[in-house]
Image (cartoon, rainbow, N blue to C red; front, side, top):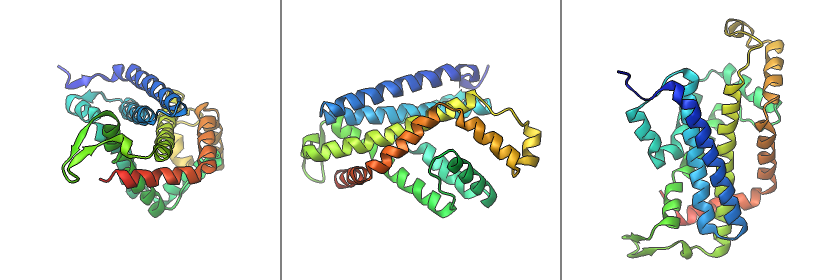
Length: 257
């Protein structure tokens, strides 16, 4: 009997279903935000983040050809795990990458018109910031959904404790990072379903530095539909930088680890 709880051949349908739910939750988050119902928009955005993270985890296993064990599935269902696991894995991978590999990855990302951090220290610091932010989202969702007794403050925590304007800023910030998570998962799924085949695996190791290989990869990735959406997300990041910084300030003000 297989030790797999979810067999490899069943992962692809799960990835697509998770992305379908993530898109639905994002649409609902934006709808509630536009209606100024921030107590609803925020948790829907966080749910979108979590479903995107689930899709990304399933996609990782699908790519390497292994199913999901029962213990692994229990991890995937854990809210805190879904909010921080991917960033923690990327942070650890950054420590092991060679300088050449970091440079190649960075140059490839920049050639696609996206922002890239090539410096290892800066990239790791960015991931640490993202982990710290994401680790607070469970508390935010709980404040929106549940009435909790705050033992330290000897009173009930209420989402209404946050002024409406700060609710709006926080909602904008969390929707923005949820959209990014969704687009990253969507782009990974698109890339893996349309693998780069112009140069074989054997040729890749000997041509990784070559201009021919780089240009072929660049052309391949530029054909991905999600790339346009990712560029638009980065454009909105630049335009809304002040509001997004304010949103992070609100998150830090009301939600501590």
